[in-house]
Length: 213
Image (tube, rainbow, N blue to C red; front, side):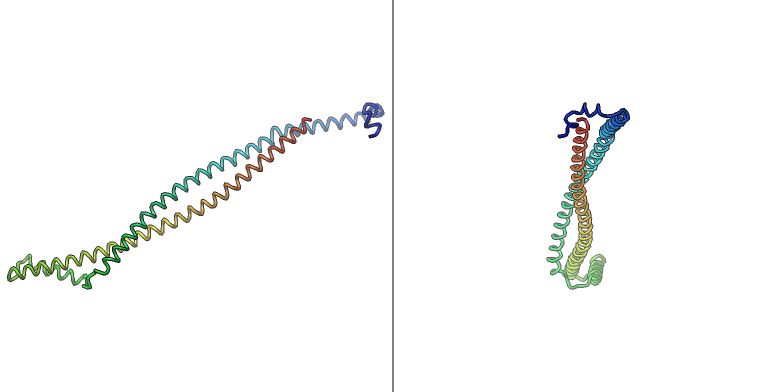
């Protein structure tokens, strides 16, 4: 260590007036710079960091709220899809069973047979009771066959509608799943931003503390 470092008072005494003024100005500038830095940290940097932290936290709340909403929507849609799938399964089973029992008769022919037999009975054009009973039997047979054909047609139409509903729900679920993935990525990014902001805040606090020493 030099003699000047060991005795700063002696070192100052060796300076002339201009040197002392220059030293004073230098020290005042250093004090001003430190003061400005302290004020900047306290009034600007801390405030900006805290504002950014709050903004990111608000985003996080909004995203987690939306994520919860999406999961509720997905549960509801999955429940609807399950119900529709069960209906589709039952309808297919019905068509499969009834399809083998469908009459080979043409629907138009069956309607014609039913109407002619009905007319025969209504107008009492039968010759005897046996002929009347035969006409009633033909009517009943044609009516049952027509009901079976109509039932199959109705169920097939319902199947088309149910399948369309199922496809629409699947599309909605796909959109919601994509939104969940996007939100999860954004939430992770936001957590990282908040962590970095807290690191920056600690660094500013350390710099602020060093300025006070």
